[in-house]
Image (cartoon, rainbow, N blue to C red):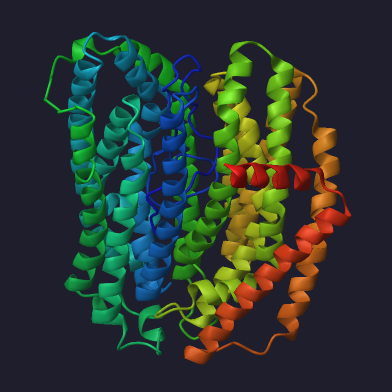
Amino acid sequence: MAESRARPSNGPQPPPAGPRSPITPVYRTANSSAGPGLGPSAEPVPPTGGRGKNLARSSLLMGAGSLVSRVTGFGRTVVISAAIGAGLLGNSYTTAQYFPQMIYELVLGGVFASIILPLFVKAHKNDPDGGDAFAHRLLTLALLVLGAAALVVTLAAPLIAAAMAEPVQQDLVTQLSYLMLPALMFYGLFAILSGVLNSREHFGAPMWVPIINNLVVIGVGAVFFLVYTRDAVPDANDFLFMEADQVTTGMLLLLGGGTTAGVVIQVLFLAPALRRAGFRWRLRFDFGALPMAEIRRLAAWTLLFVAANQVAVMAVVKIANAAAGNAEADGPFVPGTTVYNNAYLMMMMAHGIVAVSVITALMPRMTRAADDKHWSDLTGHLSGGVRMASFLLVPISAAFIALHEPIGLAVFQWGAYDPEQALATGTALAVVGVILMPFSVSQLQIYAFYAQTDTRTVALFNLPVIAIRIGGYLLAFALLPLEWVVVGLFAANGVSYLVSLLLSMSLLRKRLGLLGMRKVALGLVRTTTAAAIAGVAAWLGWLAWPDVAGEGTEAKLGQLAAAAVLGMALIAVYIVACMVLRVTEMSSLKATVRAKLRR
């Protein structure tokens, strides 16, 4: 389910604003080549430059907000999954959730993050009125464009459902889409209003307000569980094999309307922050004063990439739905869109907490180095970032691989999400553990292009990457048993991430020279060895752990204990192994922690 993050993101994203302004924020949005995640995100990253303690406080506030937002966003996924399961209703809801994200990205998302936001900051810095007139015009234009787009796509909901859903789902997906597609307009307004706030150095509200959206949807899931699901549990098959005509209007109104309400409330809660920033929106229709020619010129490559990526999103949703739709009622459980999305969000949460934090710290430095044409500095920052991200991500990958069963059971086996569905999610999570590193490293390398304000190269080399990904999806569906198709989809993602990593590395080396990857490789051998030792130890602990399969309080407590205890043991063994193997990043991490504690 959607995480208002900010899923993730996931994949090549629009470039940050240039290095000149000390208040220029960097935005991450949901358009990415990582594969689909739910709900567009617009997370401001601490700006470059400095304004003393105020900027430090803003960065700390935003970092804390990002962490809480990701945790509550994942919490909403777990709650909704427990309420509706991973059967027909769950897959239909997940499919309908993709539509607002996809249309938002095509209409505005990527263009806003990569083009319009820097213009926002420039207008605020240079215009006599602090950029108010520019903001009024742009908001008015966005309201008209997004409103029209929301109306058109809502009316076209049956056609969209026919393209992405199986016949058995189409009616449910259509009805849910009628309720959820209007959220497109509010996603866009939230992104632009957040840009207004960030251009005025008000960073807290855009980061914290999405938490309210998450809490609203958590409430929706809790109410659904209490009203509809509780009496069907423990017989979760009532939801797994529910027919479309068994889904009531009340269920649809609660799920679809409640999800859209969360986005609307998210926008409304920006109003106090806008007032404190001294901004009061007035409608202005003199759009001729906007630099539309410049926006069109700069946005062309971003739009090409975004459009290609949305084709991949449609492909993975359609294939996951097709796999689940072809399952036999008396056969094994076949994972569909919900299982895919839940495992995907686990990957994006790990990537977001670790790799995005590294990117946040690196982007100002890489951008300044690129602006000054200090290429050795840029490659040094990139190499150091890859080493640190690898050091932190490798044990997470090991945990996903070694402990996928207890993690899947502990995190997802609630309510209508039965043990078989949770174990299927855990199996997908094991593949996520394998592909997490190629994905995150490829992202770090792509941001080296964005530091040079080069969107063209990223768009061009990712077109074959996306084609490989879609081809892998089709092969997975054609060659694998239905119950393994979702695993195959993740494997296809992994192959495309690896290709993206190799292509971006090759292009960067031709442009910048040596990237310091020998040192990265040596460090990765050490950290991977340490993680393998820790993973084997945790896996052996799981084999020796008492059986926690089944349902009920005792089984759930056992699952939670297994995931927590074995996970902490894995981290402890990894740290000790890193010390024995003299992993360089271990010393850097200890020095950073000591410095933070002194402060």
